[in-house]
Each structure stands twice: as C-alpha cells, then as structure tokens.
Image (cartoon, rainbow over all chains, first blue to last red):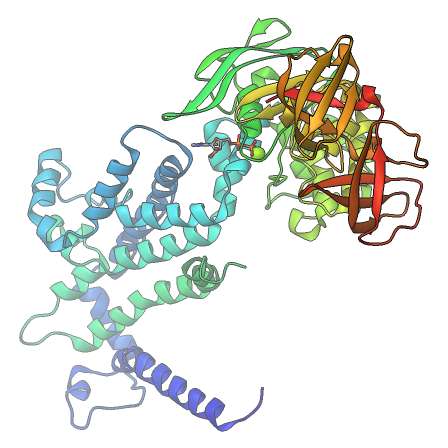
Length: 274
Length: 353
Ligand SMILES: Nc1ncnc2c1ncn2[C@@H]1O[C@H](COP(=O)(O)OP(=O)(O)O)[C@@H](O)[C@H]1O
Ligand SMILES: [Mg+2]
C-alpha cells in the first residue's frame, strides 16, 4: 500500500470513527470495575478500578444473573434458528412455485414491513394473552420466526443466486420438494442465512419492549429487562449494572466475530455479482 | 429404453399458444433432433416431455403408457441443460452421484457407477473439483455424466453445446454421437443449429412458431424439403429462394425468373399448377458453366468472393437479386466479371407461393 496523503487521511478518519464507536463499550467495561461513589466522582475515572469482585457479588445479589443470561440466550437462539428455518422455507415457496395470488400475498407481506412495530404492541399483546402464552419465553421468540423482512431478504438472495434450471435439474434427479430445499437451495444461500441469523440474534438479544410487556416473573426475565429492573431513581448499584451490561455484550461480540465475514457477503451480494 | 409419443400436444402460457397440436413418435433407441429458430418452443416441448411443464392439452406416452401425470423421476428421463445446471456446492463426484443418493443406493454402488460414467467421459482426475473450477467443456462433460450415470430410459438434451466454442462443439458432437452408438438410449436433442441436428440425429424434426414443419432423415430433409422454411433452414450456405413463374408446355415444365431466365425443371418433382412460385436453388448445386453449350444457365456478375479452402463461396448479382454459389472447382474469378452458372433440372426445388 502506498503511503500517499489521501490514504493517510482516510485512515485517520477511519481510526477516529472506530474510537468513537468503541468508546462507550470501553467505558462500560471500566465502570464495571468501580464502586458507585467512584463512578459519580468528578472527573469520572478513566482507568480500571479494583471493585470488580464486589460488583460481581452485588450483581448476583440483585438478580439471578446467570439464569437471566441463559434466558436471553435461549430466547435468542430459538428465535434465530426458527427464523432462519421458516423464513428460508417461506422464501423458497415464493421463489420456486407459481400459485394464484402469489404477487398479492408477497405484496401484502412487504407492505406489512411498513407498519411501525409500536402500533402492533397492543394487538399482539391481546393475541398472546388470548393464546394463553403470557409470561412465557415462547411468546418472546415464536411470533417473530416467520417475519416479512427475513422472507424478503432471503427471497431476493435466491433470485440472484439460484436459476430455474438448477431446480429443474434437481427435479429430474428425482429430489422431492423438501430435498431440493434442503440439499440444493440451503447450501447456496448460506450468506443470506448468516445475515438473517445475526440480525435476528441481535434483535432478540436487545429486545426490551416485548419482555417488558409479556414477562412478569423475575426468574423468566431476560438480560435487558433484568438490568433495567434494578435501576431505580436513587441508589442503583451502577457498578454491578455496568458489569452486567458489559457481560451481556460479550455473546454478541463473539457471534459477530464468527459471522461477520459471511454477513458482509450476504449484505453485499448482488452489488458485486460478477 | 423407451419409445416416446406425443399426441395432439398443445401448450399455452396464459393467452399465448406456443405449441400447436404436435404429433411425434420417437422409436425406441432412436436419436431425434428438434431444430428450429430460437423462441419456436423447442425447450417448452422438451420440458413437457421431461415432466417439468404441464401440457395444456394432448397426451405424452412413453412405452405406450400415458405419462402426463408422472414426475420426471417416474418417467425415468435424464436431461442435460444448456446452462449445465450443475450444483455449485457439490464436487463433480457428488453432482454425478446426487440422483443415485436420492434413490438410496449404497455408497459402494454409487462410487462404482459414478466411476464407470466418469471413465466413459474421461472425467477421472476431476472428481474432487467443484464446477467453478472446471472449464466450459469439462462442465458440459460432467452434465453428460450426471445424465449417463442413472441409466435412463430417455435422454433429453436442451442445446447442450451452445455455450461451447466452435472447435469444442464439434468435438463434443462427435462424442455424443459415439456415446449414443454405444448405449443406444432413446434421445431427443434440441438445438437451433441445423448442422448439429443433421450430423447427430437419425431423424430431424423441424419446428417453427410451435408447429412441426417436417420430420425426416437428414437426407430426406435436404433432398425433399416440404416447404420454403425447411428449404431455407437446412443446408449451409442456405438455399437461394427466388420468385418465379411456373409454366407447363406439354410434358416439359419451366420456371421463369424475374429477369426472364428460363429454367427447365423435372416435371414429376413439381406437383404444382402454373402460376407464381418460389424457386429454390442450392448453392452447391450451381456450377460454373464451362462452355456455351450448357443448358439451364443463369447469368450474373460476381459481387463477392469468400474462399473457404475447399470451396469458394460466391455472391452473384442477377437482376437485382443476390445468388449464392458454392464453387468447388476453385477457378480464379475477378470481381464484376460476368459469369454463367448452370443447374440440373432435377436439383431445382419449386414451392408454392
Ligand atoms: N414460463 C413461461 N411463461 C411464459 N412464456 C414462456 C415461458 N416459457 C417460454 N415461454 C415462451 O414460449 C416461447 C417458446 O419458448 P422456448 O420453448 O424457450 O423456445 P426455444 O427453446 O425454441 O428457444 C417463447 O416465446 C417464450 O417467450
Ligand atoms: Mg430453448
């Protein structure tokens, strides 16, 4: 790489961007090692403190942290796996079959993405109550597993990466509809699946509103809800909360490290098709 | 092996009818080529035979059994696609073995049969590669192998060679022919290239706009084209088609071209009544006239000379029309030279207008 002036300035801009992005995470990590009074001292401490173990004990004291972490993980993994499976299957249906009203159904589905999610809170609460699954994890992950965004994303990817001839070849080879989906289509849309998986996982992991409305038993809390529930106007154990917050980010960081390459491939597919 | 029969087959996409009342019988072990210009419905017809598309009306029979409702697998056909349609994520070996795996054959048996097909097609050292690591010709071979491995009753080919360069195309053409002579499986081969159709097939079916124009052996089609379309389609360079008038005087029949040239035609080869006709003259049947005594001559000026080695392809202007002549005597000619060409009466084709 040549060290030309534009090149250097580009790097400077990017490094500043990275620092700004990373700063809140680092700060959360730092604050997780301080006591409440240190955090509120002025100026705030920009170094790692020695209160980590105390904060950790405090964290376990105010909430069943590992249970709650497991709850979050369970809801996110179930929702992600379900979404990847059902969205891809549904997208395959829209992609591979011609049926009456296909375009109308697809159009309505796309249109449903335009409805602000806030508007659907009350209807979905009522539906979930009617189904008798209030205060269950099932209500958190199940309703979203066949979502319009995922179906749309995967179908568009299929349009670009799978030809009709390929499906026909599989049919001539004697593959059943499910076999074609499983053995031919799924392996070819992996980047789109990875993209959807990470988007779903982040969404479910960070979801706060739905658990707030649907979950009432503290043992069933997920991380977002548990961390929020111990914050009160006065006397919140901030060191413990920050530590819990930092720990709750770790799984996402790990997931991103493993999937980022595939995810980029999925997001830029079509754009760089050659 | 199976015979294939189509009865009154029609196909519409919405309001557009792309196949009209087709009838065709392919005997067991026969190699039939479907040829016609692009968009005439060849692929649609092949897909209906394969069971990938439903006919709008009419019957498809295989071995005299009605198969309209059967899946491609139940019909036991194998198909080679123009785009090859290899599974990009599978190796050559897995591509070829996919249908055997679906049939639930044992690993050992799959390996053995894939190996046999690979030997026939010389794919030995490519088995572990992915399609993206193969050249066009190799992919084509793998696509053939995938069809061959299953021992189908019928082979269907949809323009399998049209993505290859000219040299490879000739080579693969020979290979397909040799393969058919070896396995003798009923084959239906779609192409838009008449030479491919003529060289490969026992019988050729010529289609235009969803209708069969003529069915016959390559020689029959060349010697007795049923209409102007077939006449112009078969043969390379293609037949000269000129406007003319047919006249009968006693036992002799003549055609009079627009510039007044009179040509004798053989009366029994021309069942038409007097009046406006189209006269067909094959370039390779037109010979440069040597002396003044030759009969059935046309006169014109040389307008273009294209040497191809064995023949010189000439374009001759004649009363505003251009006439193609394939000259194998290789006599040197000058541009704008006035020459005479002659043709035997029995080699003149006459079609209704
Ligand atoms: N799925 C389809 N829907 C609508 N029209 C089609 C479809 N498939 C083919 N056609 C039309 O049918 C005609 C014949 O197509 P095709 O069989 O592919 O021709 P060929 O293979 O001889 O080039 C074309 O005019 C094409 O536009
Ligand atoms: Mg075609």
